[in-house]
Amino acid sequence: MLNVDVRVVLGKHTSRYSLVTAVAKRARELVNETDEESIVHVGKPVTLALNDFVEGRYAILEPEEIRNI
Image (tube, rainbow, N blue to C red):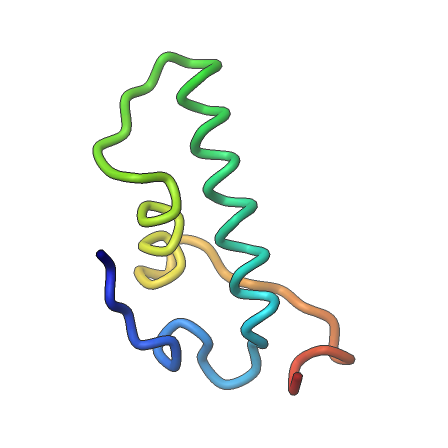
C-alpha cells in the first residue's frame, strides 16, 4: 500500500477532488497504453499514476472556482 502525504501532492492550491480525478485519468491512460502498445508496467496503475504527480512528471491544472474546496 502506498502511503503518500496528501499535502505534498496537493501543494498550495489543488483540491482533493482534482487530485482524485487527475490520478484516475492518468491511471486509465496507463492501462490504455498497456493495451494498445503492449507495454508492461511494473506496479498497479493507480500507484504509478500517483507517483507521476508526486515526482512532478504531471501537474494538475484546475479552474480558480474550485481551488479552495
